[in-house]
Amino acid sequence: MESTQKKELKDGEHVAFVGPSGGGETAGNLPPYDGNPDAGHGMELVE
Image (spheres, rainbow, N blue to C red):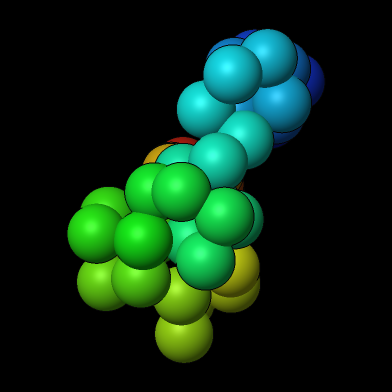
């Protein structure tokens, strides 16, 4: 699952976990988690 999540984020959603780059609203809301609101959150929940 981490492969798909990482690919999706790196494909174009990379800005989501970046935060300050563009997706500051979503990423900026979950940066303390692990910098990755989607990948970090999903990975933690899955694991």
